[in-house]
Length: 119
Length: 112
View (tube, chains in turn red, brown):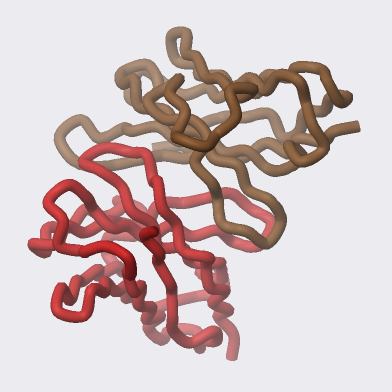
């Protein structure tokens, strides 16, 4: 059974960089059939797609966040990572990692991790 | 790209049927048969309930069904049960020349 698990600091200071890692188990991140994505959900609000990566390193980003987002992959560790720079309180959210094909849907999700931006 | 439009809340009694709408544009819902629906219970990750407009993943009850007309997709839940009370989100592919998806704002389903 495929499982995804997010990890990283739960508290980040304003203007700093948020860094999260998603570890994939029960399957290979190097599968040619899937992309690996990040989605966030501010407290009490809806879902927002941040971006996705293929095992080869090819990336797609939400245009609204593109200037601040970097997603990378480490196939040797079966992990992919998110970096979001210059964070503000508006970036406070539960961050999920998820799997999808060349088109949606997102079929497997991590449990999510809350990141709070505060000094 | 704006979020898809969903009603903030819907409600129904056990055994009844409800429908949640998801309105987009000709650039997303109207252009692709790639609408998916997710159920989210409080404090939990979203769970895929419907994909490609009307397909159900293995293990999802046939009480859940999806459809689309023009720029509006719909999720229907029949035979409402207490455990169906949750938030529901629609999602549509909107990529054209690149990968891009947009979510709806979510609908809170209350089972009375």
